[in-house]
Structures are given as structure tokens and as C-alpha cells.
Length: 79
Ligand code: SF4
Ligand code: SF4
Image (cartoon, rainbow, N blue to C red; front, top):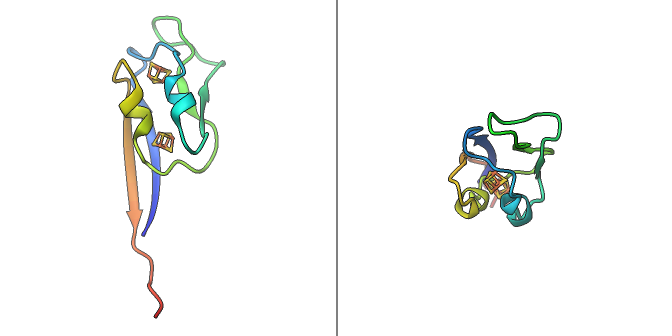
């Protein structure tokens, strides 16, 4: 099985604390310094390939700002 993930960031809740950035085991998150949320923070975003959809970022977020989506593809198994 091959899994690919991505995140949806609630711009009203993210406060740029970077807990998710520090917790991501794939190191694919960073603050987006080109954008501001309605509250004036740089929101987190995915900066490179490799998100597995593990959801650790969503679990550690103190503001429940992240939703993780995960796509799983079945692969052929060779004997
Ligand atoms: S942990 Fe939550 S509030 Fe903090 S930067 Fe990540 S998404 Fe934003
Ligand atoms: S789901 Fe996992 S791999 Fe993807 S951004 Fe969140 S912590 Fe990183």
C-alpha cells in the first residue's frame, strides 16, 4: 500500500506557533511568509513532496487548525 497525504489549514485558527512544523516526521511543513491569515499570522503550508498523511501535525496543533487528507493506493504484490 502506498499512502499520500495533504493538509487543509483553517486560516481562522492557525496562529503560526510552528508546533506542527517541528513535529512533522517528513519535514514537509513551513510557515508561508508570503501570506497572512485574517488574524495576521503566516499560515503553515506544505513546501515539498512527501506528506504521508500520518496526521501527527493535526494531533499536535493546539488550535485544531489542521485537517489531514490521506489517499491510499493498492500496489501489486509479487510473490
Ligand atoms: S500547530 Fe496549528 S496553530 Fe501552530 S502553526 Fe501548525 S497549524 Fe498553525
Ligand atoms: S500528515 Fe504527517 S507527514 Fe503530512 S504534514 Fe502532517 S505530520 Fe507531516
